[in-house]
Each structure stands twice: as structure tokens, then as C-alpha cells.
Amino acid sequence: MASSTTASQEELKKYKVPIAWRDGCSALLIPLNVCRRDKYYLPWECDHERHAYEKCQYDDYVRRMKELSKLRLKKAEEESE
Image (cartoon, rainbow, N blue to C red; front, side):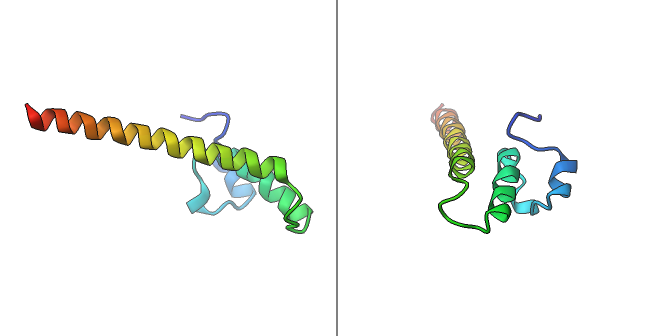
């Protein structure tokens, strides 16, 4: 299930993305890391890329928490029956 925010395995290998960072937002991490290397990791550079990546991470977290709460609610309903 590849989405617009998920990079292919070939891209991840090419840009040497660590396995721990190969998640649903990996396609946004690649340009961020390239920008960081090009700009010598200056904290005021690459703001747009950083914010896009952090928003993707946050949206993914919210999605997972909603999914977890649905599972907990379903489990509680099954136990009460």
C-alpha cells in the first residue's frame, strides 16, 4: 500500500534512510535530509520540509490513536456481552 508520502525501497536505499525511519512519511524525510545536508544543518533552513514532515508524523499519530481507541471500544463491547 504505497501512498504519496511513502518512498519506494529503491529510494530509501539510495538515500540511506535508516530502517527505523522507513514509515509512512518516508517520502517527506528524503527531501528534508537532502536539504539539511545541503544547508549544513542550519536550524533556520529547510523549514517548509521540516514542517511538512512533522505534520505527516502528527497526522499518522492521530490516525493510529483513533484506530486504537476504536479497537479498545470494540473489545470493551465484546467483554460486556
